[in-house]
Image (tube, rainbow, N blue to C red; front, top):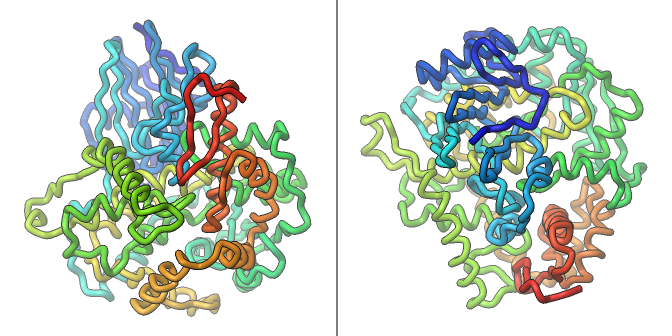
Amino acid sequence: MTIKLLDSDFYYSAKHQIYVKGFILHDSLFYEKELMAELALKIIQEENWKALNGRFIILYKSANKIVILSDLIRSYPLFYSQSQTKIYLSQEASKLLKLNTEIKLNQEAAQVFYHSGYCIGQSTLIECIAQTQAAEILTLYSDYSKNSFSYFDFIPQKKLKPDFNTAKTELKKILFEIFTDYLPLLEYSQVVLPLSGGWDSRLIAFMLHELKIENVICFTYGKRDNAEVQISKQVAEKLNFKWIFVDYEALAFPNLYDKKLNDYLQFMANYSSMPFLQEYLAVKHLKENSLIPENSLIIPGHSADFTAGSHLRPHINEQIKSAEIKKIIIQNTFFLNGKFHPNTKPLSKHKRINCHSFFNQVLTKTYITNIIPIRDKSLQKENWNFYQIENWNYHERQTKFIVNSARIFNYFGYDYILPFWDRRFQNFFRSLPYSFRLYKKLYNSILSELFKDRKINFQLSQMQESDFKFRKIKSIIKIFLPHCIKKHRLSTSDWMNYETFTKEMLIELQKIGYKFPADEYNAIITAWYLKKLALEIDKTKLYFFHCGYFNIPKAETRM
């Protein structure tokens, strides 16, 4: 049996029999193409996985197997399927679809996707296609067997016990090391920063200013009266960066079946992730109006807040029991189109129990493989269960839902880097004391100081325990609000004009029984994409929505 790569944009080293794409950042040097191939082979032979840092996908091919190495965030998702004589691989799942004669919607994955916005584990929405994982070393053998393990997990391998001020000093040092290492890329590109009113993108702006990078264009988007627009503009002006605003109320969203839009949806979704529409009009507008050049390097601030501790809650702490982990993961994962926890409406108690049972079974298949042992014996006596929840979030939601959205820049022909996914930044935060990450205490503290020094400390506030308690009370009250009030609240907070963009999607969905839960507009996008894909696969079936499930009837049901 042969293993065939269907893509032509990899660099192939005949000398080392290895395919590479992207770059490895090692000892402050960038390795690409032949040098990257040579370094990658050395890392594989020595099993020096700690040296893997950067944005890359690596394929090492031998007589009877192929070894695939993904970076920390799965920057280049790779999909694979098997026939009787070949294993096919591609970054475009649609290429694999064309090579299979029996195409079926993965019904279990469809339910997961409908309620989370992505497929978990190696599954995709197509039964015959699997996907690579973040930080995965996957070996596919010619006898159809495979082996997989993760070389990075959001689990401490050593526990730092610094005092608070020492930790702040160390974080500042790490930030400057990371951004200094990226100087060779920044100095020879047009740097473009999606600058919101939040802290993460503002930290990138601060670092660019401190390193005296002047070729910076900032952009923001949304409705004109969006509060973040003014903050973004103030930050850019204060740092003397060019600033562009893309007014979403002045732009029309394309027809749902526009070819360019559907090409984009397929590129972003790849039968495994919700296709983000948030930045679509903005980047499209910048590209078509030549507002940013072809050599632009875009630097989003993805996941700094997660890494710093934004997903931690007081009840997710060092005393949490092992038995509670899966329950919390279910609550935090399957929240689109109806949240599955004991107080959720509109499902009856019986149906909620059935939903929990279903997701518990699905979760067990992948969860067991994501239980990571604490390798440092000095830590094994301590309770790190809360990090298992963080690790699940990292491997699933962050890489497949959040970070996957950055691929929009590749679609429009631009390159991007994610400095907060540098291994040094991740290593630092995953080994901090729990109290330093709760409410992003350490992160917020140092950013407050840095921003104050440059007078860009607009609307800075630190999350306190009282804020989370208030949010919890609000979330419980929200469950019992009438649907019309929920919808009004969502509409008034719609800074992106999502209500307008998703209107036609919702109309189509309502024709087959879909009821918008009025929690967030991503629920509509997820449901619509799933409906669209299901009908493309088999137009003879009538797909519809009922009682919190995406229903797939028997084959004899006709339209």
